Amino acid sequence: MSKTQIDNSTRVVPQARGELALRVEHLVKRFGGLVAVDDVSFDLYKGEVLGLVGDNGAGKSTLIKMISGVYKPDDGKITLSGREITMASPMEARELGIETIYQDLALCENLDATINIFLGREPMRKFLGVFNQVDRRKMNDESLKVLDRLDIVIPNLQRPIKQMSGGQRQAVAIARAVYWNAQLVIMDEPTAALGVPEQRKVQELVLTLREQGVPVIIISHNMQDVFAVADRVVVMRRGQKVGDLIAHDTNGDELVSLMVGAS
Image (spheres, rainbow, N blue to C red):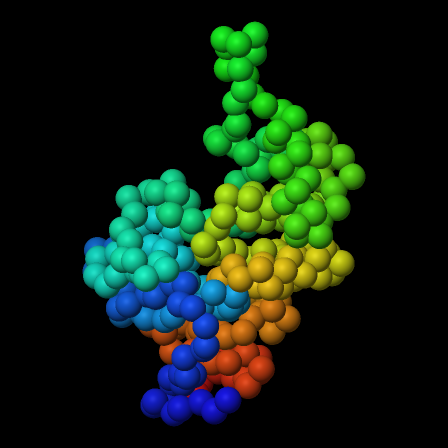
């Protein structure tokens, strides 16, 4: 698929096929006199993986925080599944189906996998017909179902998260997002501090999400991660989008050139 030259620093790709999941239009975020995100627009389709790359301070995290409800845009709009949305908090974003998995995974390390998957949204049942009680059996059964759907094997779901490997922790965080019917999954440096085998497992999970029609935005400094899973790559520099490229039509050198302004 061909690319269109726009200017010396920006290349875009034709629209992908399929159903539009997310549209970001002319987003702007200012912090005093600093413009952290400057007029950024892009589309994301269902079943598509979008790599978001840029040097430190490029505006990636600020952009993602607007999409995930942490920051309110100063200008522009966000459309999810054809409906314009506004969010006052990350909880509102989650209620809309936007799940963000940060580097720290936001897991409670002293609790087990099943509790983490349902944390804050635990199913209840009646005890003695009167008292509300957490339904641990349902949590365990449903956890097994969603892990099986993702082809994840965790031998002991009752083991505390702190005793699990980095890859297993990522798997629990992804399973939580999938169970709650995520319309969009955002992953911030998902393979940071993981060994090679666990990096590959996380990549497999991202591809599984894609096969199931869940759109994914993955932020990573690891170019191998990006090229292993991404269909498209958006490049940011100094708060602006400077590239939107089909992953298999570009390479690491070109992305770095756009990131540092050498093109």
